[in-house]
Image 1 (tube, rainbow, N blue to C red):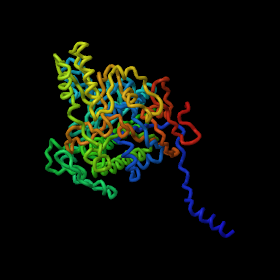
Image 2: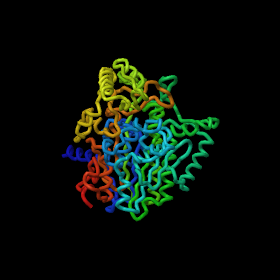
Image 3: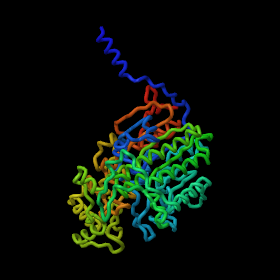
Image 4: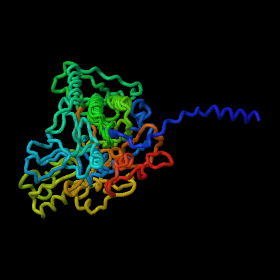
Length: 552
């Protein structure tokens, strides 16, 4: 009996005191949807750093956590990824196949088309665009909300114009992004007082310079210099001395955690200025934080720089949520990412991935065209033989059908024989492939490519590099040492988290898709949409016997 009593006592002592049940989530729909994208925030980064979050990310971990969601397509770049988040559609349907594509029939000399430009405007070029969402073929959630509830406001802020346009769409009440050394807005619009005030704060900061950022204690193992290109990365602290040349300051600010803090500060100012979440209809605030991507490209994903960024991003989100709390707004949050990323091969080779390499320059458009002409004798009578800005390759329209066939056949032979190439598909092959369904982690490489194929915009041939082949032939430390854009899961897998005050926490490791966000949020606010509006499905966020996807 004494043994039983002792066992019972020990069992009771091992059970922690029950926490007081949190207040239940409000029955009415939230007044503000906050859609957050962390650019280049892979599921791998999330898994690596989630134990250290104490700010905004810690709050989101108390909601519905899907640690392994998918940007299911192969074109894992900023524009296609952001296009899925609030349209609920894949690039094959919404038309955003890449950051850039080529239209070789364009009248202008610049045949490259930027995903967020209006190339019909004579002032626009792909590198200095007249920013627009004209290429988005479907409405965003914010636009659908405005159709159903005319009083709804659709607001988007980011360091990147393409993130703003892809999350906001064409009908957008406020749109701000970073250009040069300040936040700007759409042509024909003036900056609101909130943006003017934020730019004044940033200008003062840029003039004063910045001290080095503190390295969190848990970043020790990452604090190590790694040689890459003509320099080294891995121990950066984002200092900007007061005597830094003025022309460099805007970019140094941008490629640092400070751009996320400034983006959140502007978002908070807009919340107050526009009284978001306090109107007659629900509002949508899209906030895309770009520093993780800029830092990932400039220094890789595993150095002290990224470790500092993970802490600073967490703090920036905390500031956003604290501001909304103080305003007593009933808001719901979704957080995900446009794509993941891969670290630079120089560090990966030291960390158990010796197969990681940089792409051969022989796969660049110029060398490929030269090799094809040597095999076939075909050259373009006008313009280059090939145009490419990544995996898609466009063939010169100046060729006759027989010449084009020869060029395509030669390109397929050369690419398929290259040891760094995983797969090569023609446009005809992808067009004949049914749109994929089912679990995105089980899709074939061809199905992943099909999910980002648009017959009116995609190239004549698609070349997909093998796993761990980084598509940067030459690294430039501090600017471009690592990247994304592959069909592999380190670029496709991203976290997906939902939170609202009082909701029941749960974690679901089964894979979902980013195209599931829009239908889930639509159900949360009771927005009725036509059947077939989304490629994704509504996720039940109730966490209990109820069903948040049930008709309201």
